[in-house]
Amino acid sequence: MVALLLPAVSALRVLHATAPSPRAAAAMALRFTGSNVEITEALKEHAQAKLAVPLDKFASVLNDAQDVDLHLKVEKRGVHDEVHAGRASHFAEVTAHLKGPHKTVTVHAETEDMYSSIDQLEAMLARKLRKAKERQADLKVERGVKGKSDMEQDALGDMDDEE
Image 1 (cartoon, rainbow, N blue to C red):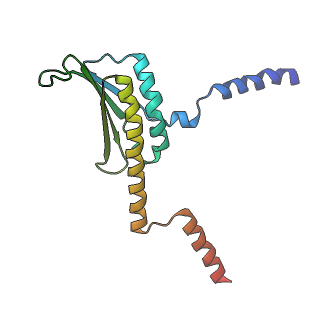
Image 2 (image 1 turned 60 degrees about the horizontal axis):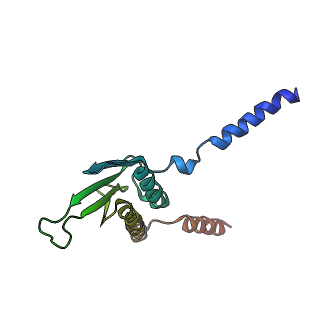
Image 3 (image 1 turned 90 degrees about the horizontal axis):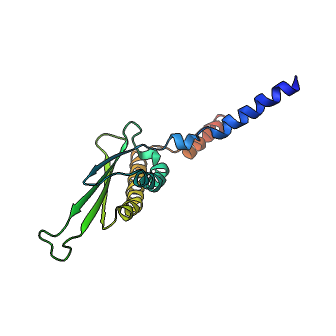
């Protein structure tokens, strides 16, 4: 009987090890669009790896119902810009929708390489989302919304009053 259970237990361990973590499931989906650029798998993987860090860190302020938009664009320079004639500018723009009505964060970067534009977006997006989270916390303080520790202290204070 024990010999029959051991294969089942090892199979459960394998299934448990391959199951995605809850944090990975909560990651925001990126919606890719592009103008004058081919969005390759390598570019998608790089963007997802870089932008997943701030999106996971500040997931509490993001709207879960809407995806995050990443728009990639390449423009040729030189019509009115003799200094950069013959070069191309690589634009990357992220639009993230926040919780609450009509709240969005838009960040864009421009460099001569698409990968470095995405790298710049990571820091800019983290900064903007951190500011949005701090603004949200400041509004709660202004409205007088109590935190968990304040509620616990009030509950303990009520118990002391009853005695």
